[in-house]
Image (cartoon, rainbow, N blue to C red; front, side, top):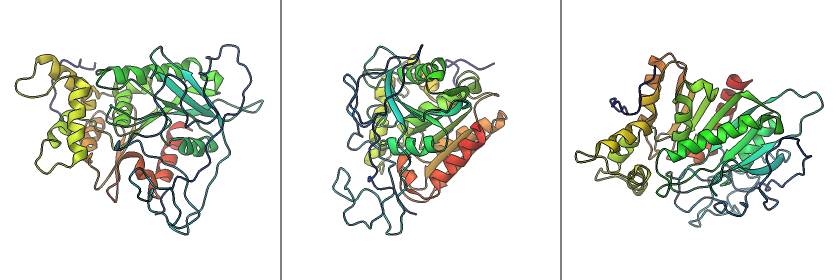
Length: 364
């Protein structure tokens, strides 16, 4: 039996893609008898419907970058990032891969403006069997970011491999305090299962993938209760699985801006400051937000990835992986050379094939 959040446990701690892909356009779909009504939106997935946060990553929000298409040209002429620098390292030998555009719709899975989800899928044939699905959760320190912030090309590649992809927003801190973010991730997952027939999804074959703060939410879905009842697998890129460890790292004298920002984000997420004088309910929320406290037999297998120079260090996942293995759950931790963070790791030529092979093994 899983222990409740109030019980304290010891907290344990290439060719790159350039943003040259063609935006996915809306493809009309037929009416469904019991389908959720799509949210009115513009014809490109990168433009959010009224009432949702505007598309694209917030400046200075690691984990919300664009895992977009590889370029066919050298760095000259490559679109620049927010700071004016080339958007990733591009080689002249990179090959452009342009998957066929999938169908696309935005839906509301709740009443709050942020509770929206984008669906990418391919129209099934007359005798098509239900397909596996991947739920994407964006990053941004739990404070910012958006479901359409550059994930559309990644979604297109996965749909070309036979997956249905759904990318969800969730309520953000500090206005929404923990566990609102996890509640929304669970609600989005329930929405997918309830309306699985709309996209020809097999509700028993769903994995969740998140970057940065979204990776933390993904590992929470994989361990809450009996994780495999929620999802079949978890992929997390740079997940801060242990918020208290992130809080401590951000206090070090040599902590970079990103770690100091993550420390402040933990305070905004919990609406309290961990420490000797913190109220008991602060520690209760902190324990609940630490994924390792939810680990038990029957949790979902996980693939956890960090870069060697990631400001969210691999120790955020090694402790979780050890706890999962001790419970008899498969957990793999991989590191990628470089100082990349979260979805930026998709610029490494080995990361996407690793993710794809892992998903196929777990879901197909």
